[in-house]
Image (cartoon, rainbow over all chains, first blue to last red; front, side, top):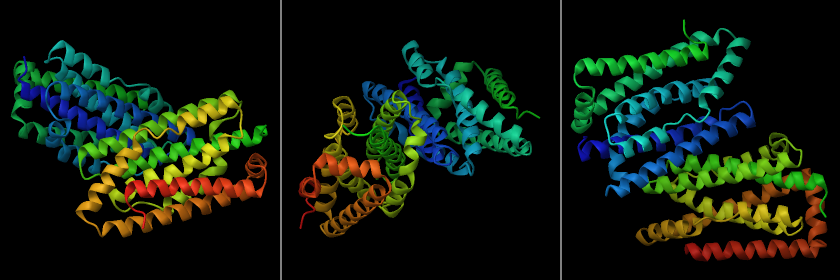
Length: 214
Length: 214
């Protein structure tokens, strides 16, 4: 069983992840070339905010103020977002699918180490909600019209992965309870390697779905 | 009874108003001095997005594509927002209450001229949802700590009103069906004057609630 500290850390990191995802998706929606595209990404943002509210409510049930539980993760997530601010609509779409997808895979892995009720909540707030279909449609249409985009978007995806890994490492180095949860949950360093391998595989599946694997 | 054009215009203007309010509130939430304040303004943004979805659904029922119905109002609303971009958290709070409140009063007045089902939808999407209480709390606390803020925020509110009136006039000059709805609905120009008087009174009530009347 995870320590209470690890549980609050996990929910706090996820809650701030959702709050900042709301914020960034709402921001990136403005780059949409059409009003329906803008409405679609704005809808994703509001779904993330609903998830934030569920996580904040759970933190309060556990006797923890959401703002205090989130605080240790604000800097790392803001760094991630400021280092990966999309400069085009398509970069925003790829980030919403590839970046958020990778984060979701990580949390889903960690969720296997916690109690069933927390795991159910985490899996629920990580539902994709049609995002894959949306990203695949937008990216494939753009790349088929302008094939040179594929290389640039593939590079962009690599940058997203690099920054996500780097910020995750910062967080784990700072939060002993989370690190203990991760290592004891996976069993040992081989287990950690297996977890990283599974996340990498799912990332590659997404790149194939987008047609950006090379 | 309003013409079908007037109805689609009214719902289209409101729909884009909600979509852009979502967008701006999500943006302004970032200036919050605390995470709970940020979450509170983000929650308001998601409520506006829900209203947008209701209005878009009604437009589709009427056989009108939401993006086409909204299109004539994009420029005026974007002008309003770009001319009234808050530069502080409190300016954002005042805008969310005073600016959006005045727009809501205008739509509520026009809603009295349309069929009962459209009127019910409009009144429903214009519910304030605790915004008054939030704005009054934030502004009164800030002004009591720093009384010099009152004059600056009162000026800011005056600017919001000026820009809102100016953009409304642009829209009405462009959209004959809406202008006809307004003038025939109020009966005559005395009726229009009465409508403006009621909106002004409610604006003054909000300024008194904020403690910004001078």
